[in-house]
Length: 149
Image (cartoon, rainbow, N blue to C red):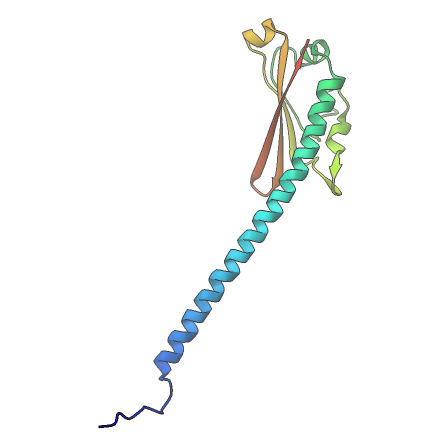
């Protein structure tokens, strides 16, 4: 006995199932490519933000003294942004908020936080500060530094 082959082709259900599977695979592949691209872009932005933050930290450490920062802080913590820098009469130049890297200025997405002194930091004459930069939407970089006598 010979077996007869069905020459009628695909059924509608088989065609719909194959289109669904192909679209599912393509959607998954596209979302993976987009996520990898976004992650790569965020990593590149982080590298640039680290460069700018490091330059700011180095400038603060090299061009500021413990005494002038301590007197300016007046025993409390101080939060400095590009919009409040001039009004706070900072002992350092507000130009630190204009540093650029790859034609991007981080002025609006950067915060400089001088942490309130503790008993130990006062005893050892150390001022702790943090530079917080939003380098990509909802992704932050924090660089810490100290100014000491």
